[in-house]
Amino acid sequence: MLERLLDSVILIDHLNSVPQATEFILALDPEKTAISVISYAEILTVLDEEGGRKARPLLQSFEMLEINAAVAEKAAVLRRQYGWKLPDAFQAAIAIIHDVKLCTRNTKDFNSQKHSFVEIPYILL
Image (tube, rainbow, N blue to C red):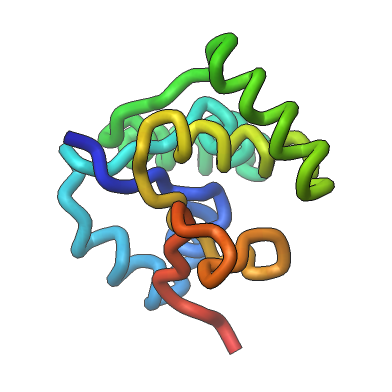
């Protein structure tokens, strides 16, 4: 059973050798952790060809959650309600629909006090 959805920023931090991200990811059970198609695309967008080749095994080690009509409907509601950018609304919708924690350090958009589906595993100072 899935427990967490990793946001792109956590994966990018890990790929950029941020120790807190690496420690967090290594402590996770890969069978209970997922990424979204959004994160998959965002990661590959910021990497060059060699970086993408190196990152794919990590990305593919997690279940990948897709966007369907229910997720799209929920994302539209969340975007209108909170003014989030569409990728953030999709991430939130995927987490809510799959009843998992969205692990992010994006405290600007995702306040874990306000949104029970949000987990902030670390903060960079």
